[in-house]
Amino acid sequence: MPETIRKGFFFYGSLMGQTMHGTKEVFRSPAFVDNAMLVTANGFAAMVLNRRGKLVKGEYVEIETTHENYDHLVDALDRWETCYDNDPVNSFYLRTTVKVRLQSNREVEALAYYINTHENARWLRYIDWKEIPNGDWRAYYQTVRR
Image (cartoon, one colour):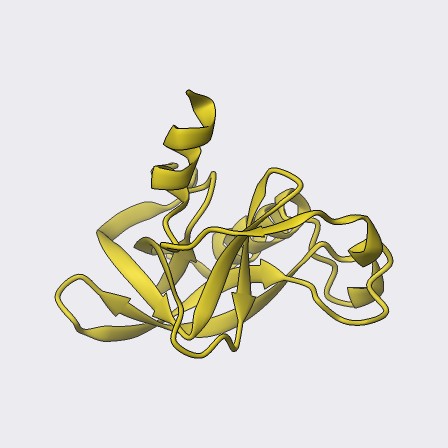
């Protein structure tokens, strides 16, 4: 029988509340990433890292799955987020491990996607940035949908 592993993800935009097929969800909690900023980039939620004094609200999801299913899940998320490990110039988002603060104030590590702000990113000059002041995509999205 394949070994199961537990892995955490931080979602802050359209993936919040979604189910990850082929996995068993073992924990979900409101969560925050400190020293990061949330922006809308041409209508998409995007986290910008290393922004002192800012935070991004989202959710932490911990799953249980096999190594093989985890690899397939990350590959699918990479495609969804236009994240290419070996081609950062053409990547819209990049993937990293971040420290996440749960609602209970416990800190955990999670996989998260953040906006690619590398100076050579091919698409960077076409993006219209707008900071979401409270770092909360759901609250912001409700106001723009009205």
